[in-house]
Length: 110
Length: 112
Image 1: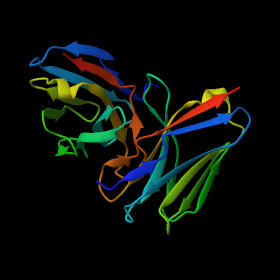
Image 2: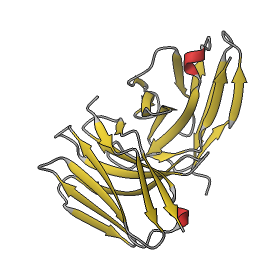
Image 3: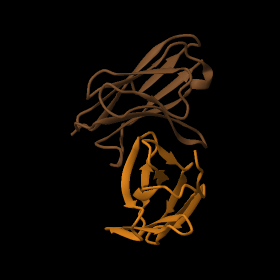
Image 4: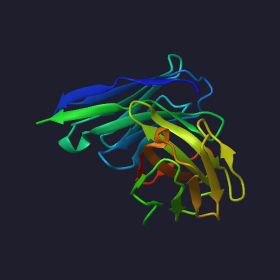
């Protein structure tokens, strides 16, 4: 499938904002998703955005979508140690499958 | 609210053994999916079932079979396990094709 690219690692201090970036290549993507995976656990849906939207805010989470550049970002405000996890970007095209990036490991230090 | 339940959580097999991974969802979702997660690879779709009575191949179907037993249950079978199938397997479900997929906690499978 088309590639979804994410940086592999991000480290931030507790209380700062985190920004996780993602680029995708399939221009027919209809939805884009952010999932969180804690160690030994499954994937938890954090938020998602429809491709005709530019921004979506949900409490501490802000998703920005630049469809022209095929760039998606997830901003976590006031990052806490409990936010340490792997974050996956995924795109959904006209089919059934989600196309996942390899994940960004977020480490929040006190 | 259980969501998506996978059994077993862990399993060790010998090469050539067979095994069925079970998945059940209690959200009355129409579509169900099996993914595998390998280090540095993200998740890759093995098979999916768009609705009860239908199944289709995903990106990496070789070595696997699936059964959509009813609307709730979708099983994944390894007929003759190989070390390359050592992975974490995730089942997911969604109400419709464009609705978010909800994941189970995974089955960690090692094949020696």
